[in-house]
Figure 1 (cartoon, rainbow, N blue to C red):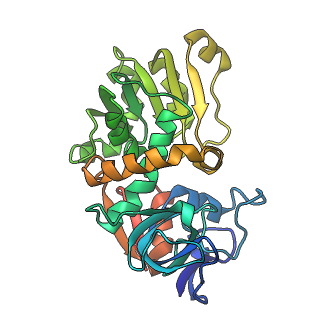
Figure 2: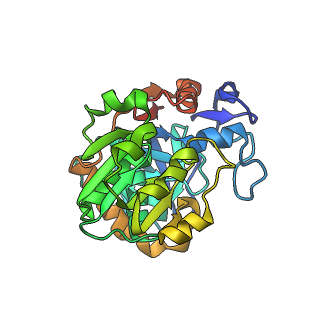
Figure 3: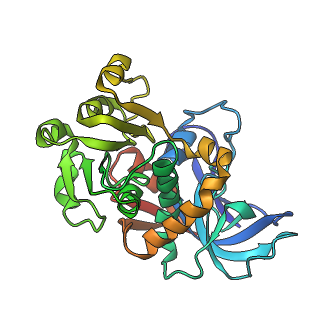
Length: 326
């Protein structure tokens, strides 16, 4: 099979196209012929070595890739509820293996899309993130019908899944923030935002409005200023740190005095501890994707251009999701 490997930690040039033996599924596993593999910031961070030495995370050489769509190639012993050729999408447990023409996954992580009218590129770009968004909005925090939601980095990979899922859960209003140079392009988005604002001007633009839930995958100054936009009893949900400002924090006294809650959601740690949340979230994700609530922009690149994909994410020049086609 053709794969892209991280040969050592470093810049995007360490991504190398090569060939490895085709893997076979073991008991309880599914082999997938990959048609699409999404590229995410976590792939960039791992490749850069930001998590070097963290238990359970990969060391070079390894094949990156968290999200995969394709068709069932072979079934391991004990897997009887899927068929060869069935359309599926999956989320890696180790954030590895996706940049390949063949991928093997545990059955529990494979979601059939066969019954839905879903382009596989959209499925891989949207369904895993919509699943995580649903879990985040019903687990670490509870989004209630009628509440108002603010989503930072509105068109990022994970962030883009939140408006549709929030609307499914009854949010009355969903506002997104983006960098100033992306505000104009945001007007053509099909995502169900009620308003898009410049994150640098959000305090003045949204001065008279408070939000019950703020979703923050950005961090840095945006995270600090978010506390001023929370209603009493509001919840700030931290789901990433795209700003790269790893030392930035929030003031505990501000949290206390504002009567607000700050919660974190890391799918890699949360989902294994709460498997009971997955079935409802999977159903909601498939519905959101197939009903047009998560129509994010997608750019397709050949597998051989994985380094280009990484560079665009690293420089924040990607428009929507970048998806590799083996």
